[in-house]
Image 1 (cartoon, rainbow, N blue to C red):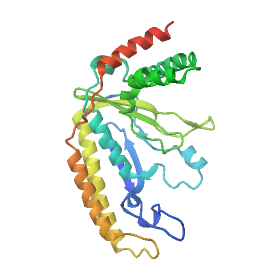
Image 2: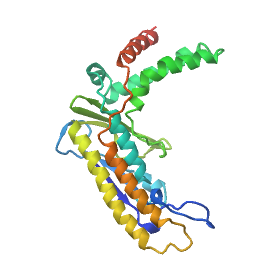
Image 3: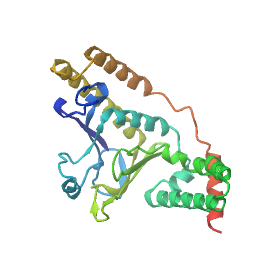
Image 4: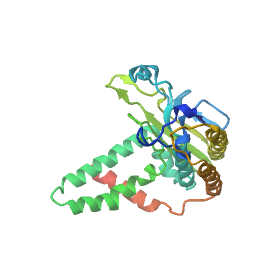
Length: 283
């Protein structure tokens, strides 16, 4: 697994504001492409999906979206730094072995989420005349049942036909599960990776996130120097503030690396809810 990215040239980045009051800043300078290469690498334990690039559009999708110059996911790379650091904190917590083995692979995960939604629909639809009961079920049962899965999902909500990818850890192993089977107009595959999974050692996963972060800030050092040297004309840019923000964000990234998430999952409650759900939906 390798997290890859490319910052856009300064003439290609997204500017903020309207035509009469354009500006750029540190966040804007992180505009670029990002994708995850799942080609087999040292540390991979097994794969059932062959070589895959997550966040890569198919040739047919690129032709459909006329004018798209890159096959990869375009967004502000700094958002992915934040998201990956969130993931790293979350998966420092072990998923219990029984749940890891019985839920945390692609077919079982999809079935589990379908069952949870079915349980929600059954319990809420029977009580449509009482919104409070529906809210109580959501807060006390449905959300605790599935929230640990969402905590381990990389956010792709900014993308049309957004692919989904989850990261689950038990002891020294991380399972990476993804579902990217969206079809444009029900006939054109949007993503090359489709659906699959990988399993790799945790130290490899952790090391890759740290390598990605270091490479990003190194690339941003160069991007900022170019931005300082550039004549932006009427586009507003606080060049002193730009240097200060780069330093602060780099320090924040390094200081956040050793921190563990203080909120822990109540796995006994999750297990109890799983058993309750199975009983209810089997009726």
